[in-house]
Image (cartoon, rainbow over all chains, first blue to last red):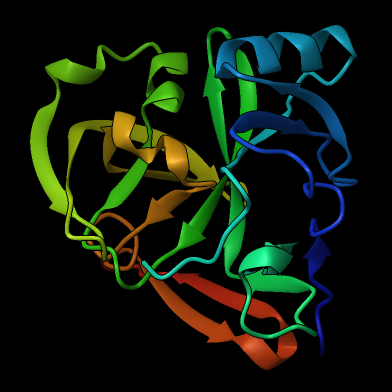
Length: 65
Length: 144
């Protein structure tokens, strides 16, 4: 069975060098900040108690790790 | 357990393939439960990484004194030395509790995700990458 991937390519585009809090399940961006602590605080103030955290690096680039 | 791949933005000004609109990566959500509240964190399942390495900010959020951990100097493809400090942490993978040593690094800030590497993740989970199905099949190794 094919499992559909979660597409964050549009929602995360345009952010650079920021911490981002996403709403679980929908993956909608709920908060953006320079610091992890404040992105969590902002997400919780908006009613998202368990935000999903990720970083938008500078110019969302290509990874060769 | 099946996990979905996730699609991420590509930098159209730095991509040799003009039709490429997104990058498909084996990035999954892990979950932390702390006295300060719970949160998820996106991590790349990275068979090329020797260890699990997370952003230092995540460790600070867990209440760790990052630099008190066991230090490691590691190298990415740039060859530049980077520093991580290891602490034993517990998080959930698809609802299953997982404990391992994780290196927390202040040098990770340029990267989007934490890394789940060989020691700490691949030694505890069978990992099957199914790119065409955009699926990752994870099975816990019972003998651990």
